[in-house]
Length: 337
Image (cartoon, rainbow, N blue to C red):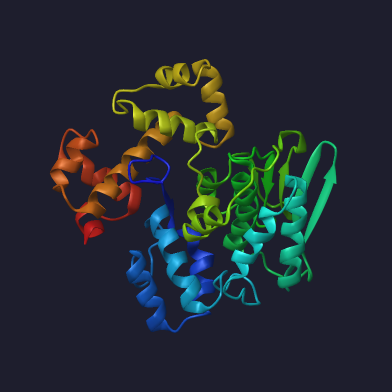
């Protein structure tokens, strides 16, 4: 994903990575943790709950933290996942003759390593579910860890299949968090919370035959981790991301709901209903795109705040300052610093 891609441009709330940072601190000294945050571009010190985080910053922290801690899951599970484990997993996946087989290999692999959860693969002609079953009823769900392992399964299947594999639903055993909207960036399907167990559901009829992946392709997949398995660049994603991609490629400042509906080949009423089902609105998507364009511009530091205000459609810098404080609880100037 590049800086000109509307998906990579997306930001998520700090709450989305809160559990991960907490787990990472258990594997690091305070000085090492500070260094990791600084080198990845994330805010140092205590992060405000409204601070936005870019996908590239998340990927950068992962790529620094995994080798630094000697744990490829960076404290998300009670047992360390030692270096080269994911390389072995990808090698095992490359030999799968079907995506059903790939899921079986995936569950078997993790069941050899995890002490907290057992991955249970349930299959029938109409549905395949990969579920996380805790070994103890007192095990607390690790929200980022649950998300990460489900996305790794989905990302590997999509890589093997050559395109994003459709997902019927994702269920999490933890209650709905305040950052629930961020999951729409990650999962191309409805997301449920407070479920009996965490799991991801597929329709086996939509599984393509795996394509042969070379060792060099596997190396690229691993080198880019976790971008290619957490954050998809596919446009066949949730309707909210399809609208976002359309707005980014169009003159988004003047685009309205009927324009997006026409581009997505549906009526405005249908699009409005589908966005509502995903917990968002056309205006919310437009405002989020404007916010993320502004954040990216401030991070690059090439343009003045006044120019960024104009570029993001504000009639006056004061209006931009008020909107930016509402979005992030910070001023544009302090965000840039």
